[in-house]
Each structure stands twice: as structure tokens, then as C-alpha cells.
Length: 262
Image (cartoon, rainbow, N blue to C red):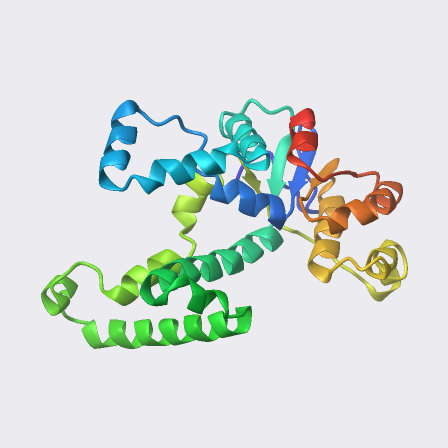
């Protein structure tokens, strides 16, 4: 935990820079562009072209998308600590990132195992059922192999289920050192939402068809004392004026707007 970030009331402390709260839509784009901000060496490019020629092609296609280009610029600034704001991520966004990562990871593996068309037809609940089965099987396997050397028991260091867990579970150490590099992870301390407050700003957000998770992001950003909240969710454009009027927080809805503040 960065020493700058929290007081006992959950407010950002010892902060010289304005704080920018990143919601899940921004966090997912930030996560998925991990590594794209690093220029590949000529040796890397030659190896990829030789081993699997489609990889460099796909990477260049991704980099050509304007939004991805801008998110890569954002990563570069934040990862190098050259930003003029403090980028803040709460446990709410992390939980949604974990949910997204599990689904995306399983679909990627499943598309290789059974074909992309089959898995694309599956909804979140069905993916959740598959993940539940995988978790149960992994637990049974771990129990069966307990007390033996895994490499001797199965002939390899990792079983198929181990590898599936690696693909679908978000690794905390990797997240902090790579995927979320440059971001400040903060706790939510003493946050409360009494019934009386529902009839104030949250009522207006809900009335304007903003979902519960997005409403919570706004309330937490205000609780933490953030000056900005960044979201690529189009719903935020609809409530931008209401949020600014009620909280004083500026809503940033595009990578370009974020870069202008960084």
C-alpha cells in the first residue's frame, strides 16, 4: 500500500497531486494493454515472426486502433510516474476485473479446446458453472496428490487443471508489479450509505439508468476525495452533469480526456 493513500476515514492523505479514480472499464483496458507499451527488440520481432507469424500482425492491428493507442500512452505515463495526477483504483474495480479476467481467460482456453463459435454462445452464468466445476476438480486433484511429489505423480510440474487456474485466476503479485503498474490501490475505509442518502444524488443516478456498480464507483470516488473519475462506459456521459453538480468531480469519458489531465 502506498503510504500517501489513506487516512482512517478513507480520504487520500499527503497528496500533492489531484486524484483520478479509474472505474472498471478503464482498468480492463489498462490491464489488456500491459506489455504493448514496451517497444519490442528486433530479436523479439524476428522470433515471433518465425514461430507464429500472426502474432506481430495482430499486435500491429491492436496498436492501430486509436483508443488502444491512447491507453498505451496512458500506461506509459502512469508506469513511469510522469503523471500530474494520482491514479486511484478501489477494491470495487479490482473485484470486477477478477470477474472479467476469469471469464476472458476461460473463453480463450475454451476457444482453443472446443472452437470459438461454441464458447461464444455461452453466457456469464454458463461460464460461471464451468469455472465452478474446474475449481471443484482442481480441489479434488490437489487432495489426491497431497503427500506426493507432483512432478513424480503426474510427470509434469503442472497439471492441466493447474494451468487452467493460472489462466483464469488473477495473480496478485503479477497484478501489482505488471498489470496494474503505476496505479495506486486503495482501501475503502468507513464508507457508508445510509438510507437517507439514497434519496439524494444516488436517486438521480439510478433514475437516469446508471447501474449499481457504476453508482458505487461514483460514491466511493467522492468518499476518497478524488477530483476526477474516469470511465469509458457510455452511461457516464449521460450522468456527467449530475455527477459534477452534486460532487464537484469531473467525469472523464475518453482516453483523450484522461491524457489531457495527466
